Length: 336
Ligand code: MRU
Image 1 (cartoon, rainbow, N blue to C red):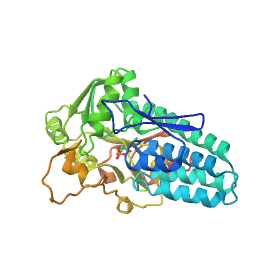
Image 2: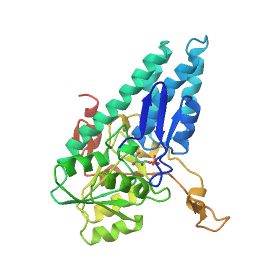
Image 3: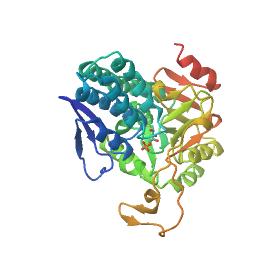
C-alpha cells in the first residue's frame, strides 16, 4: 500500500479523506495545492507530509527555474508549505534538506532526485524500524495502536505499523487493536483499512474502550507513531496518545513509539516547546456532514498531545531501539 507516487513531473496523492470507502488519486503539478492537500489532510502522517513537501519544492523548481528571481520564488514556496501544518517536524526537516539545493541554484531535475531520495529513504527507514521493533514483540502478541502510523502515513510500510507488519511476518501477531481516533477517525478509516488489506487480524475499538481492554488483560504492548520528539524523549503524536500512555503505565503494559531520526527535533530540550496544531471546531461538532453537537457550544480541538518520556518503555528507530535515559540515547543517535 502507498499514498504518494511521483512520475513524469507529476505528484500523485491518495486522498486519505476519502478512505476507506473510495480510493481516489489526485494529481499535482503546482506546489500551492500540495500545501492545501497537507492542510486538509489529503496527505497526512509526519513522514508522508515531509515527502509531499519535498516533491512540492521540486514542482516549484519546475515552475520557476530559468527566472532571474528563482531563489525568491523558491523561498516563497517554502514559506507556503511551512505554513500548512505546524506540529510534525518532518515537514520542516524535508524543507531544510531541499533548501541548500535551490539556494545553490540547482534546478528541478536535481530537486526531483532529492525528493525521490527522501521518499525512498523514508520507506527504507520504516523497514529497518520494523525489524528492530519486531524483536520487542512477544509471541501471540495483542498490540494496541492509536491513529495511523502506517504505509499511508509514511514513504511506505509504516513506523508503528511497520513494526506490526514485521512482527506479523514473523508469526507473532495474534491481534491488533485499533483505536478509532476521534475526531477524524484515522484509526478506523486508515489503520483498520491497511491491516485488513494485508490480512493482519485487526479489531476496531472506540477510543474510550482502551482502558477496559487493558484491564481485561487483552493488550500485551502498545506501539504508536510520532510527529515530533524533543531531545529528552517527550513526544507529540495524535491527540489521545497521552491517555493511552497513562493507561499502559497503570496496567504495566510496555508502551513504544516508532519514528525515523527525521522526526527528532534536538532543538527542543523537552516537549513543552512543541507547537500543537489547533484545528477547526467543525471536526468535533459534526462528522461527515452530520451535526453531533449543539450549535454555539465552544470546542477544544488540538490535533496532537505530548506524552512525557517517562511513560515510554523504548523508542524504536531505524538505527535500533533506544532505552532510558532517552536524552543520552537520542544524542547518540546523531553521533553514529
Ligand atoms: O493528524 P495526522 O493524521 O497527520 O496525525 C498523524 C499521527 O499522529 C501519526 O501517528 C504520526 O504522524 C506518525 S505517522 C508515521
